Length: 339
Image (cartoon, rainbow, N blue to C red; front, side):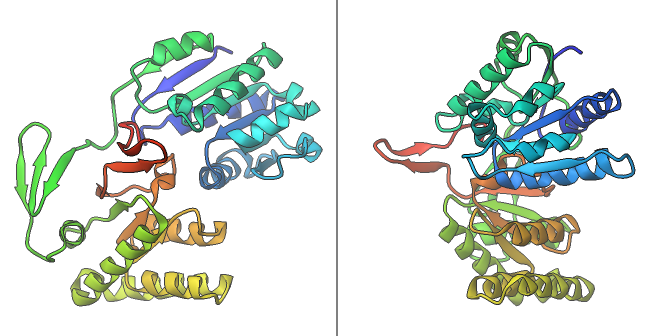
């Protein structure tokens, strides 16, 4: 099998390609390791693997994202294993014997090699796996990057680069109610709220769309979600009666997890059509929020940048509220273009 680096836009089918390759290896008695940068993404990928690779086939999939002091010998009994990059690093340092049985390794979000925080760990993991598994097929999945050929050469892989995306992407900058797109086109938004962010979201929801809003901190994500909920309260026509009933059921599921003030706050927001999404959510909370958004009844989610790293939530609008982030020792810096 030839190793491949697939550099394509988000949501253009790179995961499907990786899972087809995995199916090919499993049919030949192989074993698959799937690496992702975040626990939230690992939870999404294990569900994909169980649904698309394991259902009615007899293959077994496992996820391991914690306990960095173990080689996890129990994973030897599984055919597909989903781990975070840090967990893979730990498994290699503890010389997990089952790693020698791997025939395919998939690296998701390969463009994170260039990040100062996560990049070095991912690079070390790839280097160790290359040395330990010279015969294994390696598949790297990446956003469109300028040096895909260089990374492919390092992996001894074939670069596959494409700019095609299933849904056209329009990029623009919002000034008050004036939306200026790349290329010069200008759109004037309807005046639906005095807050710029809220007005943009209300315009999109009023046209049947959904919105993802990115905030830099957890507290800002929760604050923006509360502001959107208040706006939806004032414009009850934006959420149908049927959708409100479904939102109530999602809120009840959140309260079934626990009755903490945190869950009650989240459930209240969900009932009103919005939610926040950050690392403080449990896996159960995250799953309900993501399911509600994918089912199109949750109209807006305000998230921290962790959601941007591969979790697939299709939206009509993605709104980035701040383009600078505070870096200790450097002050406020522009966020990376890839992010």
